[in-house]
Image 1 (cartoon, rainbow, N blue to C red):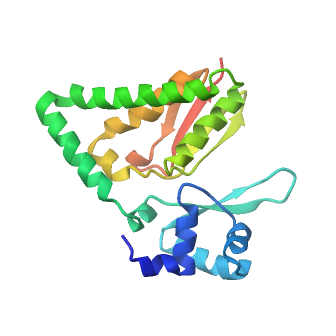
Image 2 (image 1 turned 30 degrees about the vertical axis):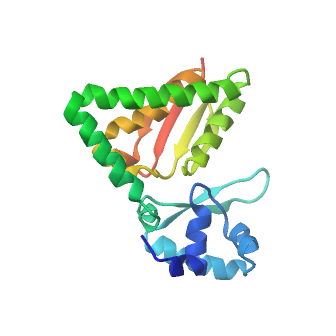
Length: 208
């Protein structure tokens, strides 16, 4: 974790702004009242240090632009006290009830999260349900986007706020699977995972 002084710098402000979100050099420059070139210089350093990734995207009919998101490594710059406590609690649960007890905890969390989301978006069209799911994930600190592919959807998670917990308790990943399965129509397949060394968590959702 970095000191408060770091987050008062332009580089630190960029990291904080990109947590759970994404943005271009121009958008960040407008936010902080500095030039886009000044922001680009900081982004180059952050990218060199493995803290941000740049992705070429096209917004509407405009020319492609570079959007930046945080990497897993960047999450270490933020307070991480919760993961130690959560891991300790899960160890106790595992010691008392074994793996089934841990799975039951995350099954319950996933179903409860899915129920809340379904109450909000369950009657909406599929694309609006995907948007609703993405919004919930962003509220939880996940940098996420999605796109339409061959009548289905591809959901991209570019970071994991729970990476240190997932490393010890991979059952946590079942929460997002439950939310997708119960809220979005179609068959879902996860084709890449940050937990296994991938560059993102990518879910392909085939519409039915």
